[in-house]
Length: 366
Image (cartoon, rainbow, N blue to C red):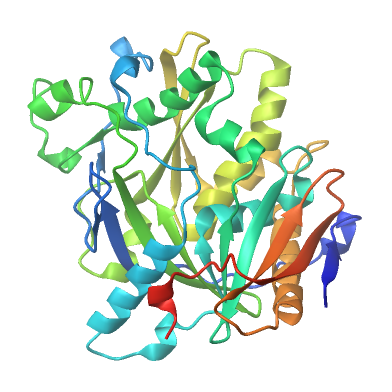
């Protein structure tokens, strides 16, 4: 097989009952500090505390913004390191817990889940099959460069707004421990330098249909104290988002058609129960904060013209993953495949790329 394609259209063939999606279970986590040093713990986990809407200027501190060096595309290496670390630390030696058909970042699975309704965002992935597991990571393209770093001063500022909202909505200790509006945690967060080197990531295991998946996902914050049972952690996680105020019917349509689809997919995949959205004006001031329960988001768009259906997304992804496992068959840690989704967005192509460009690092080949 040199090249094969999985047709997306017509998407009506993905109607019907939804495949089983098991509740994600967190099996581990890790952090990156301000210097981008990897730590196998939750030291960079933040706690949610509502932002002060009296002075929620998302442009504040832009001149000190520290953006992570590199391509903007996160290799899968640290995720594999985390899986191996957790496995080696497991006293129960439950090897089955760490077996998966697919391993990748949540962002990759989100792109696939949203593909049936995606008409304007091309993407490309690399894939390597090793020990009966397909490892997937995103390739950098000109489009991903623009999305991650901006293609104009205005776009760059708007990217910062999203990070700043996270900064203004999180603190370093549980919100229940805040006893005064003058608590240093609340005062200092406005002046904290936004540094995208810093991340807290969850590693979760789940199953969609016939496909076992392990994914890594950056987690914005947690609602309060972290549960002692690791597999309960996702129940307290929160996703933070910003978007334009819904002032016109077109704004509402775009929000429900595109933003809510991505918000739902990102949070549903990893099992995050709540999305908190800051609605901002054109000058970057947050005017309203609204909470959405992840499992209730599809109800907002149900029955509306031109919208999306979560069942279609799940059926599509389940069938695509089954097909992917049948065409990526060369079990070689130094080989790779290219998976591409481009205009006119009618199909996803898989092509064997030969030796080279493996998704795996040398330390992962055993």
